[in-house]
Length: 487
Image (cartoon, rainbow, N blue to C red; front, side, top):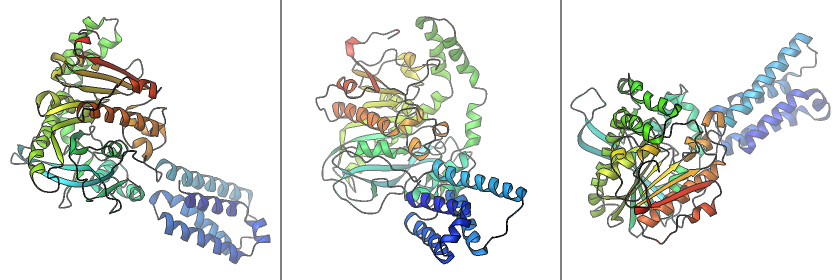
């Protein structure tokens, strides 16, 4: 809650509760003037937001109390009802702005400022999600890049399509997220790119998630010298905003269609973790789920989106804004949740991608039957012991190169996103006990160090991160040191 918001609530409540003794000592003109000044200051410096409506009601009650000169005592019943009403309004006045606060994102620590621009990518590939057989796949890409410039227009925190889609997902009015205009993103629109050549990363978001809901993690990474292209997987993110103003939201009908009747495919694997089976006995059961569950097809489809973006890099590097700024010999991919699985799949199928990272996603698909030939990083949240760890089977063969397994202790799935900042109440954000800033610091440092080593080719001992962060458990496997079954 912002300072003037808190002052507005406190002053209004105190006056409503103690107006009789206050009126005896202070001229009402001053009281009314103070109330008006506080509201005006709040609107001027903080601005209106829908979460403050209960607080505005408190202020209005205080103003009416000052204007009407209520000297006559009410009956006990009326007084009790007034107190109960005041308690309800006061509770809402505190809770609403606290659940949806004007929050601070971590300041990026790298030497570069961060710029961004939006790119629409029209593909000559059939759109399988829509009913129109003539539709072609169209993606919105958000490009993030290092810059030496400061100032410029602030990048809006989450585009309108993402906001409105998020509101639709939870049945909330779209206006409830207007306050996000107040968030300092540390990102600037359309400023110049630094006069250097940078490794390129492609990022894939989580399922029915905000593609642009990863500002904390991505600004940190980009500030250390990477160009990142975020793929917004149309119809499977919360929302996309296209240049013509069209907003495309998550397609719940299609999701229902592809999910219907599929649980029986994965249920045996879930049951296998509950039974007293050895790894070897459980492996074929889990393998069957990893290679047949409907998410496998989604991961493969998203991987094609990633590959299509990689295919555009050469043209973007030959002319236009990114001319000679993209190091095409060092392209990496990473993603969160199902986007992490798509990143792993893209690493397998595209030789142009040199390293990949999966941030807390299950690696559905073919990897269980093969092995990475390139460096790969898997970061996990601190899942409870009863959680079915499908990835210990998916990654059984790890990599012929480097394979890293990291866990951030006391973290949860949402700690890799901005959600713990956006909604600080853990029961709603589903974040872990770890401080949100620390979770982003560790994951940012881990991902940056990984790509620094394998794309920038810096000398780095990743094991040292274990001693730097007590909340990190990192295991490093290198080529021949990797055992197969059960490791």
